[in-house]
Length: 225
Length: 316
View 1 (cartoon, each protein chain N blue to C red):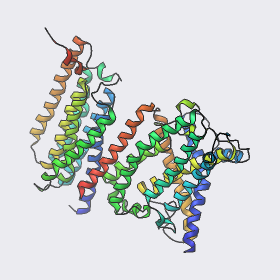
View 2 (cartoon, chains in turn blue, green):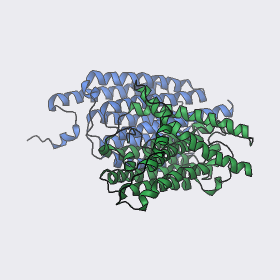
View 3 (cartoon, rainbow over the protein chains, first blue to last red):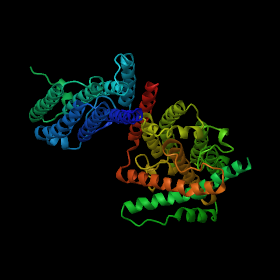
View 4 (cartoon, rainbow over the protein chains, first blue to last red):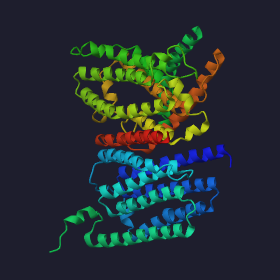
């Protein structure tokens, strides 16, 4: 493995990571349910791309399998599941209710990214693995941004997508710091994610059937006597 | 020495001569994308020529600012053209007079005078457009500053000639995340700063929705011609900064011979043509944002540039 090849791969991985972070920011900035689903698909593709790149660089068949699993579950299966369970609510283009307006949540997001770097900085160099420099801080930032999305959204499906974005962030870190994780663990995680999507999707559907909306932020005002 | 001064002046002449052409090509391409025929690409030249031969009328309530503003706005891009790489890869005579921040402040001075002139006429639409331009301006300013800071941090200099080489030597630098994010942020900035579609509609005729154009509504004759020409040159200069400094510093003259410098003119124009194609397709596929959504657009640009800076800092 010559070093210039390695350099090109790591530059491409860094680029993928930057776009990954941009999609995570997109979750915070977008207004529509459908757009956040598309962002999630894009983010999963970037995750798969990063896994593939690292897999090629480290000659690791595990990571290529992770890339394949990611594409199969997150870009094909989860959108399909959401379409079956929640259906029209996802594919109708309408605006999401939110707690904060977009400029201030974007500013907070920038602060969160800085925080992610502060958190990740002491961890860098703890274990010597090739791509952690890139993937560790970016993955942690994407994780935090996913959690932030869950907080600022008042809508069931975007909250679910925020949860899945957190999961994407964890995977983005995982492929770099533990490239030799057994495929069975990755497979289990992927099935878990699909089950989460299914359960939350069904829950959303039943909420929608009873209350007539999926704006779950309003549900806190409901009280049973 | 003399050659360097000469090339520097040649650079200014190129900006003066081809800026209206770029504008004409952009509007023609946009019409073609919308399945219309569109005006000739030389229409801006004809407009300027016609306006230069007409009488100029100014309100008698306006002061000297109104009369001076077209000249200031016209001179500002010319000064910036002296500072930035338009044709050559090596620094020219005036290159060290000012850095990118200097160029930015000169461009801002032109905009400032145009804004003052819009307020000066007491036309109801002028001050409205002026205040909106200021709103876009002060939201775009932090993005500019962060982009320039990151760029100068990467290259260790704020002189554009030094910055441009950093991105392509070695070529892997081109794909650096900070570079790609900076390109995205600066592209959004060009759209905002030049009044392109997600922020403002350059061809709209409806005064209430105008941002950039309502500032020059009161001008006629020579003043209108200069304002129009100045707008085209500002666009050309911004594209040159974007393409030659930030994105693709290829196709610039390396040698000192006159032939090589002249050859770089069509190469640079070709690059600009490709960029205008991209810009026009962005413009045709988006809708204009409502006025109060503009902070979101520029906020996204700001966060992108901040992320570029952070990813850059972490690599050290």
